[in-house]
Image (cartoon, rainbow, N blue to C red; front, side, top):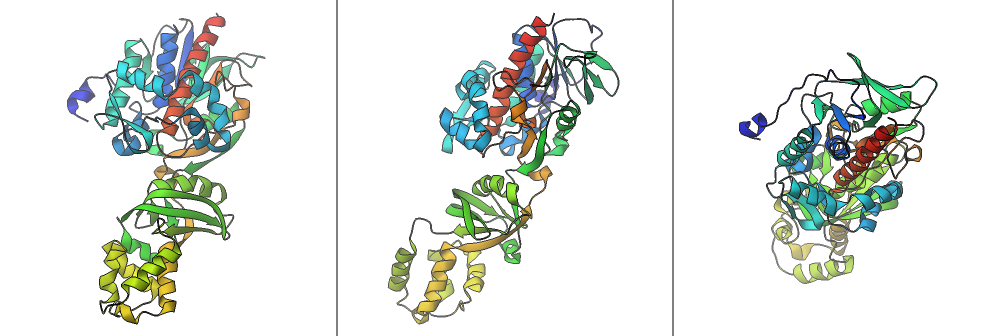
Length: 436
């Protein structure tokens, strides 16, 4: 991000000295969801204050999609709901009122043009996540929203003998509010400010918190040989997740070997399921390096090809990336210098089984500070899906990752953050008006 872009947006704000202005909506958290809530609440006529514990807005958004910000997806509504698993139905109302087309139109209005890439993924044309974050910040500031950085919220204040919001307590003072939106994010990438404050605040108010766990994260594996493959990416492969030898999920696409194990799109997607059972069962990955070919088709090809005197190691580039060949030779335990016409039927079967079922033992998932999203959060049964309002506390709203919703990669999670933020902001503004 250039210095000019940095200088274009003020980064400090003194706290307002007009606490009696009404209706007042306080947004806790200045991430994607919090800024969406702030902008929408302001558009609906509320006096909006955003409290952000960090020194900058939208820090996680600025690094999303490897710094490119995959803001949404062009998938149909039913595919969006499916991407969130069993909790996806909670989002029907929010997506029905503010969906991908509305989000794209909003950013176009804010000067951020978008493009669609493989799999329906939507990115800014500039490939710069800062452009997305800065546009949101300019939008809310233009609407008169106050953004207070380096301001951590300690608790939400309730009316005496009534389960209704009346303000927010920071570590310095109490600020009055007619409605409060908790948009503090999850536990992933804690350096961006997602440290679980929202869970603590919600729990203190009586909300059930589904245990937060890292989701969409890379996997550690027990096999030491993967270190030698660090940086090797594979395309058009199929990864299967097994629990105690039982197939529970599979994905087709791209993956990456790392110094600790495996990563990449299909691995991140499988990690959502793995996170639910890791430590409780023996987890394994099976990588099919040739999913387009059946075992029988590979057998016929090898029988046809293994007729000359070429060394086995010199034939393998026809099947595998070069970086994988030394490891593959060790795994099948066939001398690299062996002429291919001397390979036995048993050795041929080993080659085929390794190509179709390269096994890896999952020893764990990468920590929360490396995960893309958080699984778990405020229980959806305690949130009104039409308004994002707490069913326990009047005037309290939740949006984004703090809620127990998470999806596969592809722009789905950011769309949920924007949609729930939009609905929460709109509803909070209406609630604030009615309370005065």
